[in-house]
Amino acid sequence: MNSYRARMARANQLIDDEPGTAASAGGTILRLERLCSALTRALSASGAGVSLLTDDNHGGGMVAASDARSRVLEELQFTLGEGPCVDAYVSRRPVLEPDLRARGSRRWPGYAPAAQQHGVRGVFAFPLQVGAAHVGALDIYRAEPGSLAPDALGQACTFADLAMRILTDGQARAGTSQFSPDLDDALANRLEVYQAQGMVMVDLDVGIGEAMARLRAHCFAAERTISDVAKEIVAGRLVLVRDKT
Image (tube, rainbow, N blue to C red; front, side, top):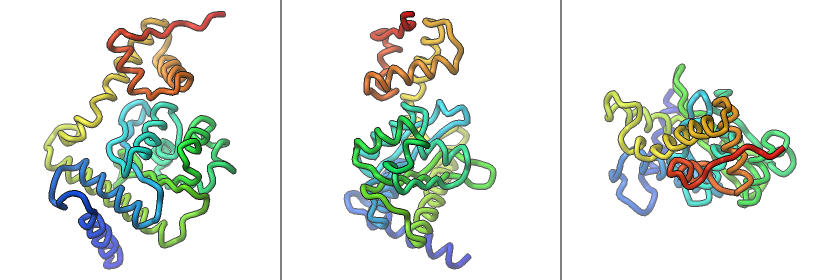
């Protein structure tokens, strides 16, 4: 227990020592962003991100990342419906892929090549959970292939536990709402995804699952994020049509 407390204290100190803003500034999201940056430095990773998910794999979204590229990589998983974050959330176990080029495409046919185009060769995802509750995953990206050393793996697990603690502390401060106010704001665009999914269901006369599949297929073909496409559908600027046969 003392060792665990020491690791948590060390991780908190690394977050507090992150340059840029005062350690006490901001809310849940800023603390998570500082966590991602601190983790990237501690593990010599190329990036890190935190995403929340729901059991239907349609809700949630990216809430924090260490840099712009990591934000794109997090969003890719929601656009494509696959990736380490999704698998870690569903399995409730760490998902470790040290070489996307060698094995990643078999696991994630869409995500693996897209991630490699953004300079990622290794990705490691850790579920955010406590007891029976699980809410998302912490992703770590590396530009070079290779497994995490045992010490780095332990640090990553500690940061994942700390990310979950930050989320639950934010929830406690927010009261009875599903997420703290700043998380609600960050995830507001996911509501547009649900709206767009419903509109595609009506336009194409298909079920909810196929509507999401059509939405994601359009995003993949157009090389756009699911959030951007959903906004256009909800605004009436884009209507998906049936494939010609």
